[in-house]
Length: 285
Image 1 (cartoon, rainbow, N blue to C red):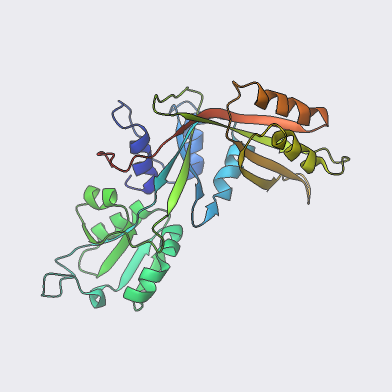
Image 2: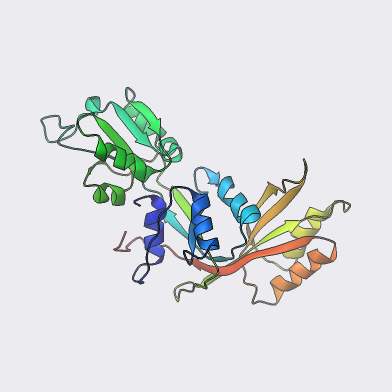
């Protein structure tokens, strides 16, 4: 509760009557949907700064068979959080010298490296499984000069102060999220649809990847992402995860898939889904 994933989920389901269920590990998030305890899982899959979240992608490929129902992009805004009164400098602000330790998720910590090095070079850095746990740790240990890197939602949840807002090193720090589950999901404001597929190349076909890309290229089908992931069967054996800016409801995409299957490729459709636009003015997050 109070992580960027929590904020992103609330953004996607704004105005809808849903119950949010929280887990510490992304594996448990997936399994809660697989086992029917939840309708959907919210999965961070790619970040502007850090790139692909390989662990989550591998879970989607190898561990579960849940279709992608939607995607959306949400800003990963991190803040320095603590007790302003405890860290006060006597002039109405907080004193960086009074912060002895900063705690956060390792990814969030890395995304704020320049701020931490410039503002809090003396502070001990400690990583935790989530930014929300970091904020809770600061809440539970007053008087020690501890601060956390986390979200405004987490600060509000635990009654702490945002000492410095937007402390990430890059202003364009966005995360792409996937909604996966058996239950359908639609939004009227989703004007774009995408499809994600997993392609396994035939072992005895030289130039097979070129043939795959050509099947999309001559039809002028845009691919927004292509990434190789190990099949985990033997060294040098890979899947190709491909995001396509087209729906399976069109004529062109099924034809392209049929063409690459004809040369011996195996194709698994992971989902054909709406791409939800981000509106900065959303009042709920």
